[in-house]
Image 1 (cartoon, rainbow, N blue to C red):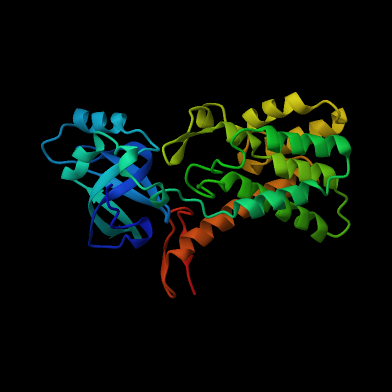
Image 2: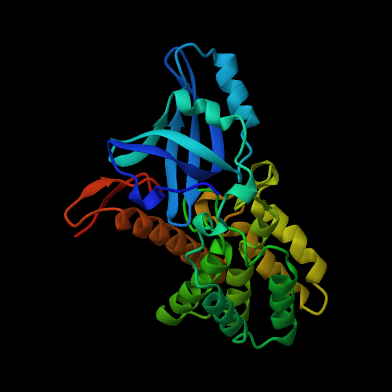
Length: 317
């Protein structure tokens, strides 16, 4: 079995790196006079960035070939050096590019090194059940319960490729946070007359389409083409149509509206009801605060830098 001598959380400037990491994503990028590969690498302690420059003798076509051969989700030997760039530590790979030709065999690896799953799975499941139990309409309660329990991957997949809750179990955790925040928002606005059943159903189902946008590979989940080619809102709305029986048509249409409009001003469908706006704000709050918290956690007290997830300046007191 191979040894893993360094983890993502231990990466710092001027450190030599030679260890196995999961490659969660590989993207070909332009540089002056050529191209390089940007990787998202991970292990049980979190995610990091790796830039693969290659060696001067490699052609652009050869760099492209290495990128095409990488299978996201598999484990590769990352051999290079870490350095600080724009306030973020990243691994740089030159001649170590040769190690990206083939992933490391699974029988040589200890699975406990790689699975990044900080969410409390049991606690999240209980929390989702508690929020769903507050729905009084039997048809809507049945809809929510059936969709969450019958949708493969809902409790396992991440909520996003990179920015927030981008780890195993992240979608369910983000869903619970969104439902709790939405319920608190509705209860905090004076004279707000919201349909609590619709609000909770919309919050609990707003990202259900994401469960179909990822597949398991190796020790990670990778995004399918549908993630960007179709979009999770449309996929989620289509999936919900199969469960409409037993729900008042007008209330079901309201739930669909929340699912389709939860991106707020940035989505194709704009929120038109108080419930839809509450779910949008709750969704954004969960995603943004998770990103800020994760970026700030990497700082020492008194440090300020541009966050890798927020892409904005974050500070830690």
